[in-house]
Length: 217
Image 1 (tube, helix red, strand yellow):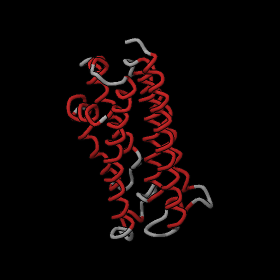
Image 2: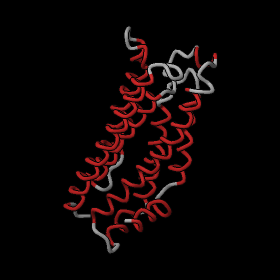
Image 3: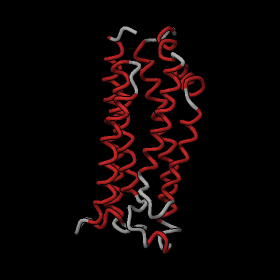
Image 4: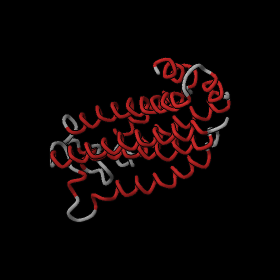
């Protein structure tokens, strides 16, 4: 497994997958739907899948002396590492905005979602959807990218819209809390989002492994 992961990180990965991690910095932008930053991170991973497909990387990987399921696991680990790196960067920004910048007027007057723990949990839900719909969809055929990515886009933007809008519903204002306000609720929502990410990603990977082992490339 370390060898196939190293191949994914060095040979298969597009530079865009690494550069697009920086879209996590969108969590700093006031008056902007910050969860689009999570979407752009997944867009960079999509570009990596596209580059690997054009290079026949999957066929090369299958010819290596490893189990077919390890090819899938290596790709999922690569995806999760990129998402994890973006998640850590988002978490640092959330920590900064919940402490030093919690009273900043530019954020206090922000009508859209604040960069808090709920937003961080929602970002991991977006990553979970990507792993389930796009990555899992790719391993249905081993080559088709457009259809699973379009389905992912159709699903993810209503989720972003809902997450950005929920705090405007009376009684749900604490979803957009500043600083350490409603910290227990915020922390609970983050843990829930992270749990969804981990469980969905693991299940999607296992399902993709079963499909890929039956696939004749």
